[in-house]
Length: 242
Image (cartoon, rainbow, N blue to C red; front, side, top):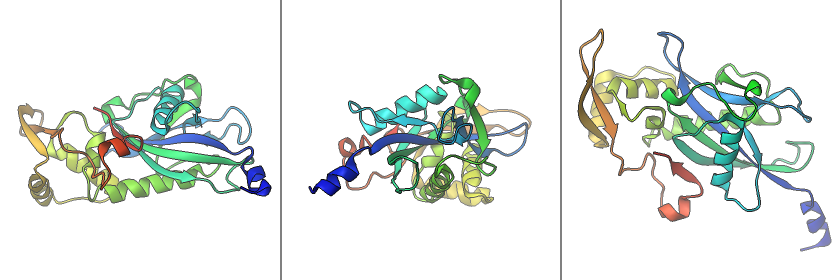
């Protein structure tokens, strides 16, 4: 390596950030995709909102760092965690920082107020109504939402938003929220039945409408295809948390 190349490497730091998505609703309104943001307490971009994250410790893996920094800043533990992309534009930060970004899904029932190490500086925001963000975090969130909408078409990642047992209407509502459009209930049911990835339970949800059967996931089937790599090879990139 040339002296010039080595000099360019000096001062490069690696950070890990996470876009954690959930479904949140107000009253009887349809759910919306939401995410927690952290208010920065120092420069650069002091007082601006940003994705939760932190520096990569030399002794830990990327996924472990993503889970740790997420827990420290928001107190949240996702049901799905996957590596999104590495963002390393030279001008994305005053100092040279490469951010390895993860995206995560949180079950709606677990989407309580964040209670990390600094709860006064953590808040939930509608994904479609974000404040001005620090660095290139608006672009990162846009990419995460794009990934989610594309992945839902060929995987069962929408289940990552749902509790262990759910109705078909719950599942369809999650798909509709992600895709931003209504789905025909009969066609949706036929498509879900064809996948053979849901297991009907003997329980029903009762209320103002007729009882609806509860289903659970076939836990021996992954939420998304890992491709040609073995689970061991992908364990640092993609994790489903029971």
